[in-house]
Length: 391
Image (cartoon, rainbow, N blue to C red):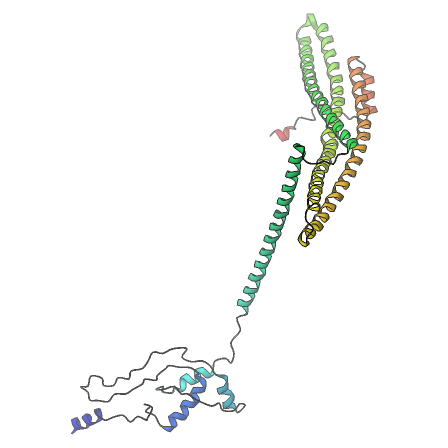
C-alpha cells in the first residue's frame, strides 16, 4: 500500500501554466512587487520541468539559460510607489522561474538610495590634464626659443662669412674702433707690468726672508764668538734694519700690485665685456639689415610683404640694441680713461718714492711715503696661521 502511494507521488505531474510557471495568482502579485526592485535579473526564459518516476534519466532537472548582467539593482521607484508618492509603473516584462525571498527583499530595501559620484577620478583627470597642458606649454616655449636661436645663429654666421670673404658690408665706427684697439693694447701692456711686479714682489720677499735669517745667524754667532762679537753684532743690526725697511717696501709694492690688478682684471675687463656685447650686436644688426635688403629687392606679392614687414620689425629691434650698446661702450671708454689716469698717477708716484727711499736708506722717508698714500702694513707673522689653526 505504501509502495503504491509513493509510486503515484513520484509519477505525479507538476501542474504548470502556459508560460511554464508553477505559481498561483498570489505569487504573481508578489513577483510584480519584487520586479520593481530587480530591474534586471537572471534570464530564465528556457525554464522547463520534467516529470517522471524515480528511475527516469532526467527526473527533477530544471535546465536554464546562462545568467547575464547584474543580479540585483536598486530601483527607487519601488519605494516611491510603496509610499504612495509616485504612480505604479507599467510592468511589461517579468522574470521567470524565481522564487521570491523576503530576506533578499529586506536586504535590498536597506541599501542607500544613491551612490557617491566618482569625484576623485574627475579630480585626478583634471589635474593630469592641467599637468599635461603645462608640460605642453613648456615644450612649445622651448621649441620657439630654439627656433629663434637657430635662425639668429644662421643669419649671423652667414653675415660673418660674407664679411670675411668680402661679399658683405660691415657697419664701422672708425673713431670707436680705434679706441677699442688702444684699450686692448693697453690692457696687454698693463698685464705685463702686473706680471713683472708680482715677480719682483716674490723675489724681494725671498730676499727679505734671507736677510732676516742672516741677521739671526749673525746675532747667534755674536753670542758664541767673543773675539768677533762686535763685528757680528754690527752686521746683525744692519740686516735687521734692512729686513724692517724691506717689509715696509713690500707693503708698498703689494699695494701697487693690488691696484694694478683691480684696474686690469676688473675695470678694463668689464669694459671689454661690454665691447664684446657691442660687437655681437653689430654683427646681428648687419645680418638683419642684409636680410631686409635682400627681401626688398625681391617680389612684392602678399606673402613677400608680410616677410618684409616682419624683417623690418626685427631690423628695428637690432638697430635699437646696437645703438644702445654703442652708447654704453663710448661712455665706459671715457670713464675708463679718466679712472686709469687717476689710478696710475697715484700708484706710479707711490712706487717711485718707496723704491727711492728704500735704496737710499732713508727709513723716515719710506714710512712717510706709506702714510701719504694710506698704505697700512700687516704686522709681522700675520700671514701665518695661529697655533690653534695648525692643530
